[in-house]
Length: 110
Image (cartoon, rainbow, N blue to C red; front, top):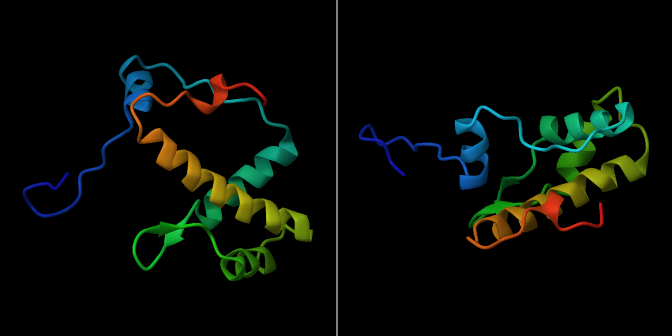
């Protein structure tokens, strides 16, 4: 939604808004220290990048550049994990736009 000054207004998804309105933390999973490091790297490099027509998953080049400059990432599978996380992020983001989507934490299998 556009503000009167032309800038975009950030709107939270309904589920997140409900947690924020209730002043309750969303039910995030507990992460080990290492999982937390991978998650922080994912957020640092960015969950996605701008594509030609819309948001796109992180490219290998983008993740490689980040990994080469990161003191924490040293294994090829860690870079592969960041690329996969980006792909899954965009997949879940698209599903989340649907009104009747079941939250990932409620689907089981985790």
